[in-house]
Image 1 (tube, one colour):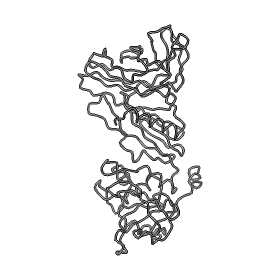
Image 2 (tube, one colour):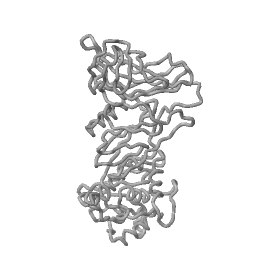
Image 3 (cartoon, one colour):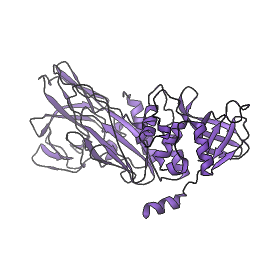
Image 4 (spheres, one colour):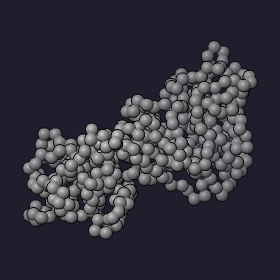
Amino acid sequence: MKKNRTGLLSLILAAIMVLSSFAPALAAEQKISTPSAAVQTSAYHRVTAKRFYLGGYDVTFNSAVVSDTTLDAGFYTDTLKASAKKKKIKLSWTPPLRSAEIDGYIILRKDRKSDRWREIARVGKNLVSYTDKKAKKKNVYYQYILVTYKSVGGQIQVSAPGASVGALTTKSKKKNVTSVKFTNLASLKAIMRGRSAVASFKYPKKAYDRTITMVSSDSNIAEVLPGGIIVGKNPGKAVITARTHTGAMDYLIVTVFIGGTAQSMIDVMESWMDFSYYNGYHKGIVDIYNSFYPLPVGYKMSYLDAWCDCTVSAAAIQSGNVDRVGRECGVGRHVKIFKEMGIWIEGNNTVPQPGDLIVFNWIPTLKNNCSHIGIVQKVEGTTITTIEGNMGVGKVGTRTIQVGWKFIKGYARPNYLTEAMALGTIAN
């Protein structure tokens, strides 16, 4: 997924403000596929006049006057990217938060035959890219790390290095993985506490290195385990970053919720906002519905079927509310289930509660008609806000209506657990 520099900074800064837990140099990380160099800590020590162990890397600088004192986290940048061109590799990055205070950047390189990182260039603080024109050998995988530096008392202080990135030189049948995108958002964006989901990604054919490094901004909320597994630990939100070997990144905000509650149904539905036919994300909702057996009336949903009730049922599966909500892909049949469960409220004059399921009849003259279904997100006085799948042009979206709206057929009020009951169930 292509991101410009401004968009990337905005996303990271937003994550800092919302989560108050951004610490890239110390974040918990795991990798999918083959191992690669990892960011450890900013601590380092001198081996010789020019040689250091810097954040776990064996580094040789061109200057002998490098200070043993590191720059703090505000000088750190972990956005380095590499792309192979003809007889050269282009590097690009985003400046750190305190970029106005640095003197520039130091670029270090190694190939896979060596464990030593050597300085190849220093560039000014106003530059955000560098082209290594000496990476000329074909079919060679060159790796790079980037540090910022500033002069202090006749010496230079450097930041902790970001994660290493690399690129295979051109004229190879193998391809660099130059972009990354989470592909199963329906199961990743909202995860029940104590449950897990496995991240998946698309790769180009003949990809050279399929390693994806995943980092959680808060492992107490959402922890990343080997194999791309994201585990819901405690209620809250965490940012999961996925990075390719070339440094391309994608971000995912994960909501961890307590299952079995009304809020858990709302959390899941909210996490699917703007999923649609057109971006293809509705397929993940259909996949969740089809994964739970036995399928209602033995019918497997297709991606072209109407999917409003499929969305409600998939949210019940994802949130641990199947026994309270039931499952169906036909609204009329689902209303019969609500009546059998004793949770159906007929008519449009009831003031609903958040988590109630709302059923619409677009042809009020046909009293038994059931056209559409969604969930009540919030109620303010007599104003109702709903979340619905397959609404409008085929997307998950919201609707604002009033109590008594003529197209409301009725509501289902599932016997949800309270948060205390849900926590007690987990404890037992």
